[in-house]
Length: 331
Image (cartoon, rainbow, N blue to C red; front, side):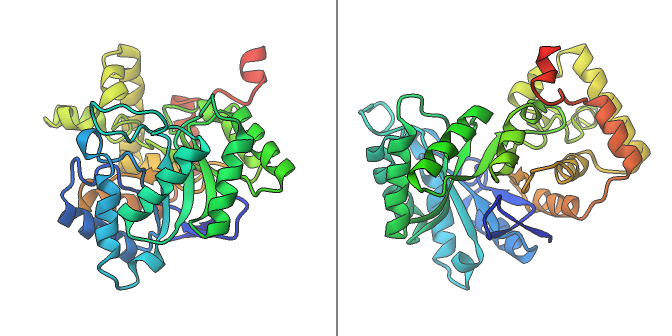
C-alpha cells in the first residue's frame, strides 16, 4: 500500500480510504470487523464514517460498530486514521427538535461528544463538515473547532460536498482567525462525474486541501454494470442515479465503450475506475465502501494497478472532463 500526506498536513494516509457506510445497514457487525481487520492487514489506515451512518432509526450504528472493533485492542485504534462527519439531523425519528443538526457551535459540541462515545475513543483525527451550512458563519464554526482542537477531541477539520468558493471562504476566515482551516474535501468525483475539476479541485489544490472522492464507481456504473446486467446481476450492479442513467441510450453507449476498452486491455472496470482517480492531481485517495472481503481485495488490487498512457487517453476520450473554469463555461 502506498501512502501520501493528507493535503498540506504531515499526516500520512493510505491511498485507498475504507468507507464504512455499509456497516450496519448491509454488512453485519462480525463481517464489518473482519473487513476492517483485512483493511489494516492490507495497509489501509484511513477509515471514513459519519455520525448519521446506520440511517433511519439506527443512526449512529456504524460508529458503534467501529467502536466495538476498536475495543478489541491489538493496536486497532492506534493504527487507524479515523475520520467522521457532522451535519445530519440526529434527532430520533419522528421527534424533530432544534439544534440537532448542521454546524452551529452548539450542535458541533454535542455531536462530537456523541460520536466519541459511540466510537469508544478519546479523539477524532479528521472531523468533517458533511455539507454546507448556509445559516452558520464560518467564524462560529472555526471558534467551535478551535475549542475542540484545544480540548484534544479532534486534530484536523475537513469538508464534504463544498463548492470551490466555500473552500476558499472557509480557509480565508480560518487564516484571519489564526486557525488551521480545512485540510480535506470529500466530494463526488469519478470518471463519469468530473465537474469537480472545474473549481472544487483547483480551489483545494490552491489551499493545500486533499481531495477524497466519494462514489468512485458512480453507484456501480463504472464497475462493469452492463456486463453484470448481461450475467444476471443487474439489480445489484447499479443504484440510484446510475441505475436511472442506464435508461439513457447515450449513457449505455458510453458505458459500453468504457467496458470494451478495458476488456481490450484486460483490466477490471471497477479497479480501473479507482486506479484512474489515483492518477488525478490533488487526489489523496478514493473512498471504497466494501460489503464483502472480495470487494475490499479488488480495491487493494486497484491501488497496485498502473494504467497505460494509451488507456488513460482512451478513458479521457470516452469520459471527457469539463476543463477548468472559467473556460469551461465562459466560451
